[in-house]
Length: 166
Image 1: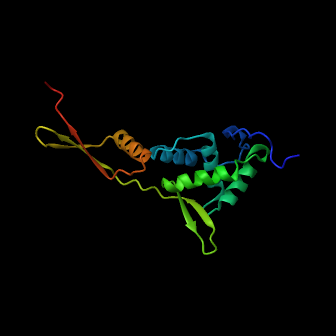
Image 2: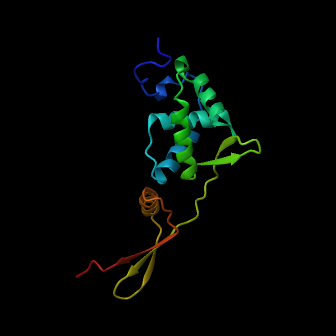
Image 3: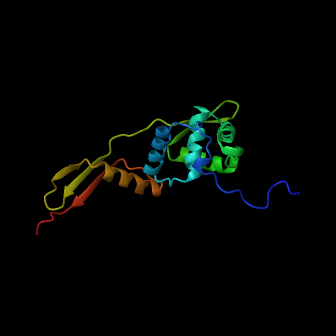
């Protein structure tokens, strides 16, 4: 009999988390929102991984997160360590998690503090040069998302506009 099954396991889904286990829904939702703001598409695997990260606690290794997921999932079917590591790398790259390397070369993961500096967005009227502050959070979210898709971060934005009259 082969050491590995011939077919892939079905991906984990949220309803496989044992009742009463898993992290707070509001904490997971906040991480989901932060991920979407930086252009990370949310999947069930990533949502489950957030539960494991929060349950394992700060400064957990990838293996500790994997073991935590095995404990909180029905039938112990945690995502593969490879899938976990790929997503941890993505979360670190996009600023959702922080990775600390210990002297004995262990990678420890923690939720990164939110760096929500106010984004200065200014409309500049083409004819007059008049500047108007844009305080719409949905515009800031859109700009951050588009920039993140290109591996960039928005520090400020000036948008040239014209009068809609005439």
